[in-house]
Length: 270
Ligand SMILES: [Zn+2]
Image 1 (tube, rainbow, N blue to C red):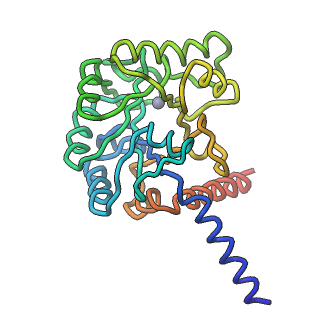
Image 2 (image 1 turned 90 degrees about the vertical axis):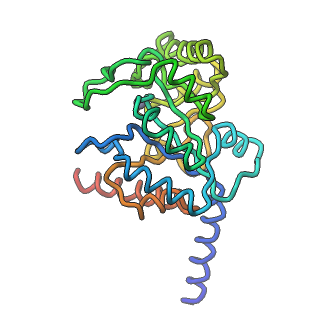
């Protein structure tokens, strides 16, 4: 009987692995800078450590369209594929991250906020360290260096609180502005704070985006939804071992376990 149970557990694990191992890890970065206490600012030494790990272990960066084609047309991607994304379009992404990405032959996506290009980061009052965002010229240069750009709305609102014409404007005007100024097609969207609802997904699809990125703890993981692609936060507090797990074939299983852990923590606090 116990052998049967072990066999069933083994089959379940194999089945889980087969189901999730084709998922592409999509990493979410913000700033590459040493800002003590800010988990969204990754010190450059840690970023180099991560790029070194990816480079020396056969990981290859893919594009947003690769991921889209993988999920819609079953496009074959390298076994160790990873998509790197940077939220908000900080200047340090251009100054610090870009030369390193090139050094390690990697590509990445940046999500600038169309109303906050080449400005100080004052779209939110979260007591964050003051810094600048990339200018239009820097974004153009970012692209010329083989990197990608997608939309992160006009003003960085919580999209689930936006209604009707405001929601439409946040999604469409940012798309139109970036595609006009950068002379490129803007096909992908990243939800500020990973915040969205059914209406957000519907309007995003209607205004012409092919897919949208969210954050792993706010999306259902069982099935892939193109308008709620899960991303994994890369925090300044995590160890290299945690990073290795986050880009591994079992990263989705790791994420499910983290979701479970949070759920239990929340239950205990109630
Ligand atoms: Zn953001």
